[in-house]
Image (cartoon, one colour):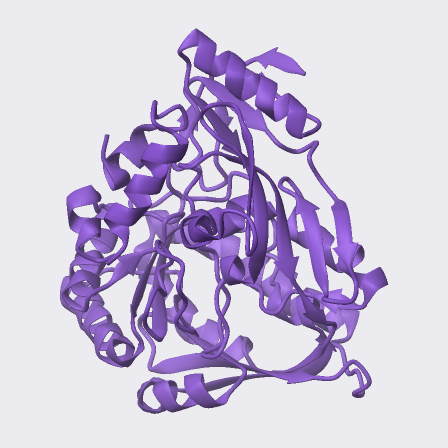
Length: 437
């Protein structure tokens, strides 16, 4: 299906573009035809997912491929726990799709609006010192190259390309399906507690290594961290989910409804932010419950924001966060959104932010009606001083020359790009900045 392009905007309202046309392929053959036609016409082509990246990584000035019609389970290997999903499948659909097979994702982030191909291609991750990002769960994928050819990349076919293709930034081709190594479904016992920030920083490394999934949020202008510790349990363990009304109070009324109002007021009266942050630390983050893993990992977020996230060598996280705290205090900024701190295991995917090192993450946010750039630029300087790598789908200011120093296999990735997309059919302004022309 082809249509004249309307203005496309991402969720964060940081990017907008009017594509020359929009196509909605229903299968891999239709993707092939769309790519071949674009190449013949000399027009660039980009696939989009859910528009949840804060950067212009999916912006398509030429042909925009909306993969919404490529959705659902394509194949299941029950013996090995492997599931092949069409590229446009949304993460929030996975509990329903994997449930009949008794399977789940090994790890998830806290937002599930993304498509599986978009999330993996940008290096989306959850938290857990022993667990990798979503892309580490990929054992095979199928993509359409710049020549309009369909290529399978797996452990047994073009295996040398897997480290590049798992986190491919949309630069190597249009992914039409991915095969994930799943795990048996499991429960999570969640303990959420406010704790002194200083003690949380002191124990971050030990808890990140010891606990299954540990993270914390720090509201600027306070000395408290809201810690979240999730412990994996078998599905036969006793379930103790949050009462529906109590969860609505915490996650919708307070975390979304009230918070949206405070952020809006804070744009014109910044003085309300510090007292609200102190109030928020008392009203939230004190829960203990057990539920199916997706229900614990995922939090509904409706307050629109902008985000920058940096991956650091894990041992650098406490010191870097202390520097961010000192920066905010020195500048007198009123920051309404908390700083999020997570972790991930080292992996071997060339453009993964966790490539080759045990990793910690620091994410900073601003309400979408506020100017994020002064805050984000100064935080980025701190992160770069600690050998930081920016999340590909979140705001940052780095270019190819700077990023080459951060990734040992940067030029190896570019060689794969030259092989699969020699005419730069899948390029756009963002990729030109971070990968070079």
